[in-house]
Amino acid sequence: MFEQVTTAPPDAILGLTEAFNADVNPNKINLSVGVYKDANGTTPVLGTVKEAERRLLETEKTKSYKPMTGDPAYGKLVRALVFGDSHDLVAGGRAITAHTPGGTGALRVAGDYLHRLHPEASIWLSDPTWANHNGIFTAAGLNINKYAYFDASINAVNFDKMFDSLKQIPAGDVVLLHGCCHNPTGADPTVAQWEQLGDLLAERGITPLVDFAYQGLGDGIDADAAGVRALAAKVDELFVCTSFSKNFGLYNERTGALTVVCKNTDHAAAVASQVKITIRTNYSNPPAHGAAIVTTVLDDADLRAKWEEEVADMRHRINGMRQLFVEKMHALKPDHDFGFIVDQRGMFSFSGLTREQVETLKTKDSIYIVGSGRINVAGMTESNMDALCEAITRVL
Image 1 (cartoon, helix red, strand yellow):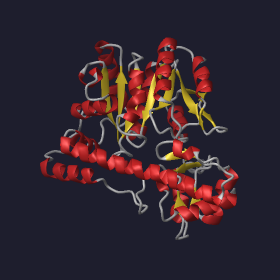
Image 2: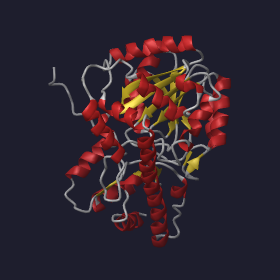
Image 3: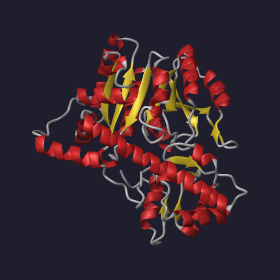
């Protein structure tokens, strides 16, 4: 059976981390994989996470299976984080939430659900988008198309082209939108533009699927949810895929959620039953620990406030690195404007570096950047910034 198997190519992003780990250069810099790093270049465990784990260790009484969609308390808290504490979707019956293994798991459950229940629907992805979106939805059996999004000439969203592109999508299809901190560009629509998108999608009968992986790392917990909430005010049906890898630092706990907003409670009950079947034939029920951490933190006013402070610290560090990078590059190469990086949000930015320049940075300076030129700003530190900017100046 296995004699005919050929070696698969490495993952475009995770493969770079493997190469980075094998690099013996003590001054190597990893700006590829989407993992938050603090000022010391480490990925910390949040203090609120450690406190939640302490409480769980003292009170946990069983390791029995969780329901297929996870604990209802977790689902309600996820909806409150996405839509706001007072939104009728939090406690009402129009929205259902399933605890999934990470945001990737939420995307795959959504893809499997769509392929099984709505096989005629295509999914439309922004150009560009997170590389794994294509893999996830191809594996789920969906037909994939692209819509216009980023304009490299202005290093921002070309909203007019995006809007015109979305106008061409047939009714009944699904469009994937990045809730905030667009991966890989860091460029997001404005709140007013989100409202226009909601009107268009409602008018056209197109269902939005929001990949919401970075809430809190752009401008704030509520500010980053403005786009999703604008959509929820306009459309009757909506998918939201939440990840707690970044804003809780729960990377290896694989903690996420799929929320589906429906027109009424009857539709929601039917969709929930089908989501359960999709989960049952995939991983059966979700892992418990990460969701228990999130529930413990979000359901305690003191821990919630401390967690928001920790998220703010991460956000301010990332934005600070954006500012420092732009200042350093302006000093070294004033004829090349990187000011757009300050305007972008989240962990990622399109640097404008070519594949050839990225390859040179890797081979000559042990600086690892995705071939598209996407950089993980959170991988920058005050200690590696000079070396990074000097190397980029050389390849420019």
